[in-house]
Image (cartoon, rainbow, N blue to C red; front, side):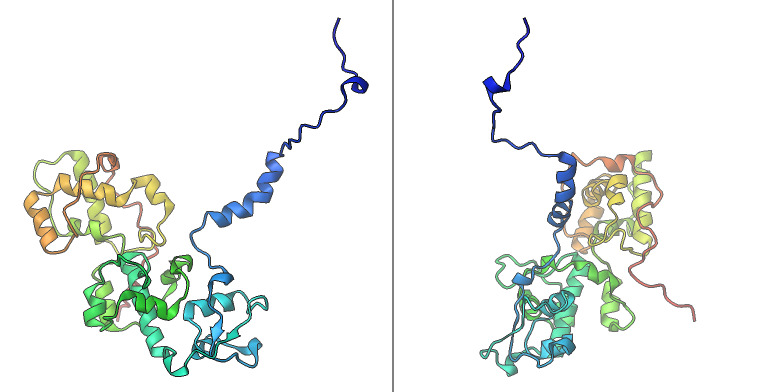
Length: 308
């Protein structure tokens, strides 16, 4: 005889367990996943709101006004972008000496310093507390006379980790008003193109396979084309990884396969590349590369030269 539960006998057990509704919970968590997936974004709690004196009319305060009372540039931009929130008011700090506040020209030099790093190395300079700062390009320290430690320039415009300050702003800076020295230097190369460089300077060695010739032709096509934001690491099109794999790893292997050791040594000595590539056995996409350039797109980093 089948047993039929009698609630009056068994009672209603409370297991103290909650089963979620996956669809509804996903809706609740969507914005958290989106926010957590991003490396960029600056909390108002992380910026410094201290100024030498609080402007009388906050509703009319400008970015220049904030710089003149000692607020750092990026901090001020974050605060203004947030709408000058009353939850995070400016705070007067009598210890800030007006003659120690960075002048606007110093700020401009620091912004250019940071911009140069973003365009040529696709990263911010490190802050003063970083114990292993990367080498500073001679162009900045020698040509531009910006020879202080790189952290000095970051600290002059920012009190938080600049990684959170979306570096894609560099894409929208116009070259129109830049100095000629800077324009000439940028013309020598930007981030994402270093390992393409050999392919516009050196022929392949004799006897390479058809597959390697196609890969060489692709790399050369990209190397001689106008650099684009689709390839630059700050703004790289995700489709590049899908179509061609990791560019640097594959290009390193390709360099080893299509150039002679003599030419590779010459590239290193001439600083066309930093060092002889190390073989990366897991990166073999280049063996299936077709010759056509399908990654550059049309979003050129450098504007076309007008025809006179």
